[in-house]
Length: 308
Image 1 (cartoon, rainbow, N blue to C red):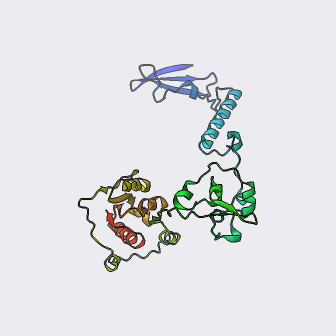
Image 2 (image 1 turned 180 degrees about the vertical axis):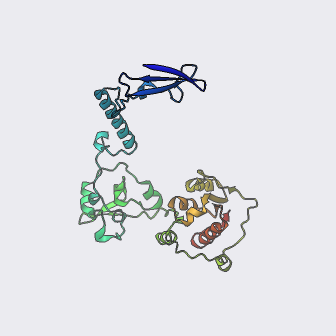
Image 3 (image 1 turned 90 degrees about the vertical axis):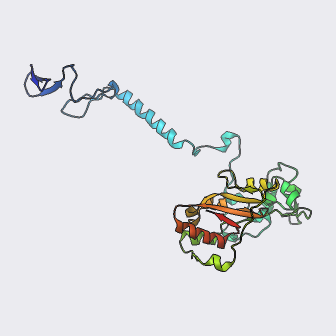
């Protein structure tokens, strides 16, 4: 049974079942479309029986297949880029040895291990030398140029600068003809890092006036390498110094992150011994943060000028 009436310019049709217990009212406009109902794709349609849960059109097997497919896609997304299940054997490489079987770095250089018995690495030089792999190269560039190798007996060309004593323990020899490498300055020390992160650093605004470190830098008739973000790093500045640059400046560093002792930001203020005149460029929107950062850098690092 159905009836149709006119209401506010819209056709309202009412349909009743045979027993008259259920009724569905649908409003239609003059174009024949239902008013207030959004058209959906057939893939998203769900049939309701008005007495229970919705009845899905897809079969049970198809639904289970879709769920398994979505699970596989999600697992691929989670594992992408992590390489958790990658094994070196599958790539034709040997698995990495555990820390207890790897030689201590300090012991390999010939230094004393500060951790001693608490060290996670092995201190058995004799066993390491007997079971180590063959050298990849015949000569070590560091040993020939600087007189010593920072890797010690773990070098890929260790036979060129390693000898064995009567007890079978290897040790590194020195090359007296080599020149010691130039050092890097302005490294972030462990004590300073803890002090800054715990906000215990005392900023003295009058330090610059008392220290006498302030001096004028003469830029006239000199080659100045301006701050170059993502380009003017330490290796690049060493190259331009060899080509005749007089004054160098580090990349722009954020003052707030320097006060937070972030290693990535402190890497921008490192200085090489070959840089005669070196400056640091700082950026921040708060004048107080800039002032505290300037005071801290003038006290803790070796810098000739600061660009704000």
